[in-house]
Length: 419
RNA sequence: GGAGAGAUGGCUGAGCGGUUGAAAGCACCGGUCUUGAAAACCGGCAACGGGGCAACUCGUUCGUGAGUUCGAAUCUCACUCUCUCCGCCA
Image 1 (spheres, rainbow, N blue to C red):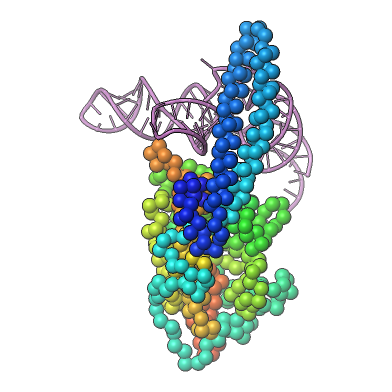
Image 2 (image 1 turned 45 degrees about the vertical axis):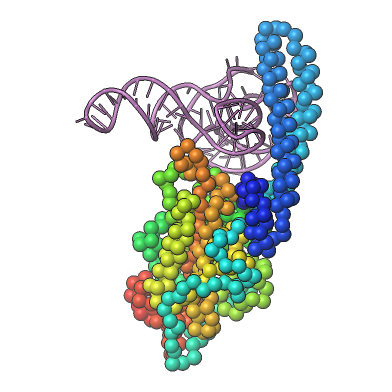
């Protein structure tokens, strides 16, 4: 959600920023609505003030048993005006909110300009592509060959874009999530939460999924929605709060399933478990003071990377261009892991800074002296567990069809070194 | 699912339809005292918005939304949420 004062005072910059994100120039429309709203408000408030005065006078007269009819009639007249002005103010306020709540965040000035993911910029990489003396398989081949990944059974239960894992691979998924949570809570300074997987509309508004992207989500009826990421509940933990400055920074993490309708992805990544309606993820969220957020994004990225380093899997980090960023982000790094079976880098984490964009939607501030200031929010995957599983199956596969267990996971995997 | 109780400022908690934006206490901030701290005492302390260069001023807000009234935290209705008891259940 944007600061209307900023738009008023920097309309050109604002329009330029929206253009980078593929939006039409709209500041003039916003400013016009805002102007009418404020003018209405001023007139309305003067009348309200008059009414309040008269009402007090009426009270005084009545308490002295004196006649107040003249003043009562006056107020009656005012009421008509008040009602129509209130109505107008309401209409303009709704128009304004409806526009503002659908506009994406302004990109940070360090974000490269671009149309889509082909314009993302290389930031850094770690490790090298592993060498195989056989042709590495896709993760689904590895899993299906040993009967531990099964798409057909999942289709029977739930349709396309679901999977069932079994036995050792289920256990491996569990080991991965435990490893990630331990790392983030014991070394990286995050506090673990268990959160609801079903949330209300206001909650999704707070982080920016609604009102614009309802099509990407699943509903559970009763006004509840399935979370597409733990970013939603974790960030909204502080919705409508005025935090004490010494509570910051807040760093939280949670392991949750994520549910996405993948509405716009028909025909994309249909093979394998790369793009599912349901997957698990360990999420990282930070709530910080504004001056900390740039550093915090780098820190968060490092925390996410630490998982892949420990797993010893080659990856690269990309800075997303203006056209590829998510709605609420002002800057995003994607970590892309190398998949030898597919011979491609694939996203395994996305770390975003949202500035005060979500804080405005959630109404989350902190007290700094006598001022209440919007916090900055950040979120990142630390990491997508399903895709980490894929990365392990492809990077650690052996010629005989078995899979080696990464060293850091062995203790989480009953001390076994092979699948 | 059945019965009942409730929702007030960061927290606890008062509040006859008319100086109640809201008592009191706690917390917090500033000061006096003290070598320092604590205690005690004194003072300050809601949010959001409009207007104004500013001092300041006006409006809105006591779960949410409607209504009654000249005037609503206080009355009416609907909704939401919380708690207690009973039933059911992981």
